[in-house]
Length: 218
Image 1 (cartoon, helix red, strand yellow):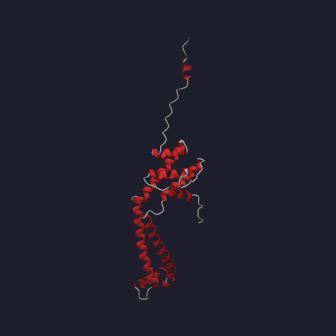
Image 2 (cartoon, rainbow, N blue to C red):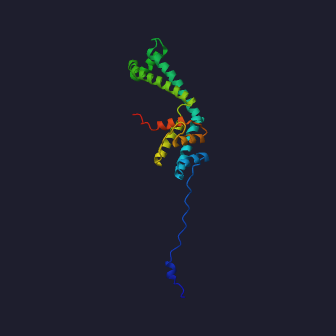
Image 3 (cartoon, rainbow, N blue to C red):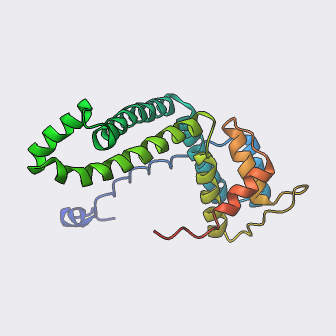
């Protein structure tokens, strides 16, 4: 057999380089008990993955509500309440106190500096007084609600995500009855349980029902 020519060897294509292996998809961990409930509803990996994502979000929001960040948030609200209340009280004395009140004299002094006359300073200060009074009360009420548990944002967020997940997978979101909760209710309870929170089916049912309410007009 004749030897191959050098020109033929040059025409031979170079071997293709091996393609780098694709990075494995990041898997969201899910507890066996929650996965079992999810697969009872729909035995599909993408559905289980969506449920795992909801559980992760619930754990994060739940930890925020009861953790150090929430404590700092309550402290910040209390600080605002303290200073807003004091300033509102000061403005009340400046606007409605006795003519000899030191707050009134101080207000007249900087009101003249700001507007050229303390009379012109009174309308905006009255608006500020009203806002500070309402904001102070709201901050105090919010801090109390947080301390007592308040509205559970983690449950609300999980319920909204679960409704979207059921719609995406074309599953019927039926609440069921108290004795026999629907799939979405059972799954929402299981999601909360994985984060160490026990919620009753009635609470889960109410949370899912609220997600269906139209948003209030701005």
